[in-house]
Image 1 (tube, helix red, strand yellow):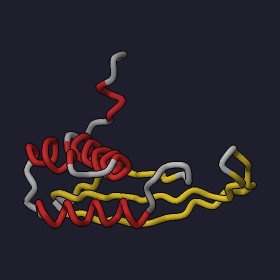
Image 2 (cartoon, helix red, strand yellow):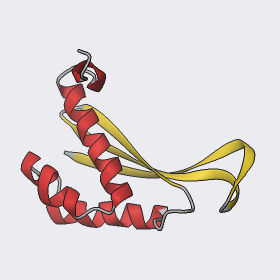
Image 3 (cartoon, one colour):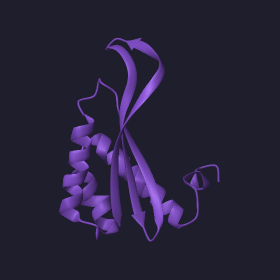
Image 4 (cartoon, one colour):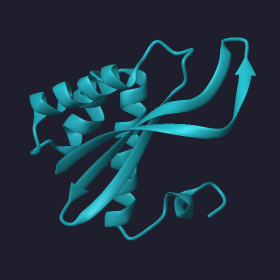
Length: 116
């Protein structure tokens, strides 16, 4: 399995204000997992009122990935690897992993919902 991480700043067309101040965009981190030519994608959005930055999320994912490597097993992903990630990194990685698994099965996540 291969991992790619990208930082992105989504700029808003119109700034808006909250109790935390004026915002003109949101920082994000995108995660791509690739296995056998199939790709899955995940995302962490990082509004200013949470204690995580792009740097923290990218470093967290990269350091945990280095520990487990590209030969990470399903059990490691569902167990220790996810447990070692901070919440936004865990969300992005888990989203990419689920997307990858469903793409490998040539199915959509929605096709396995409670109404199907």
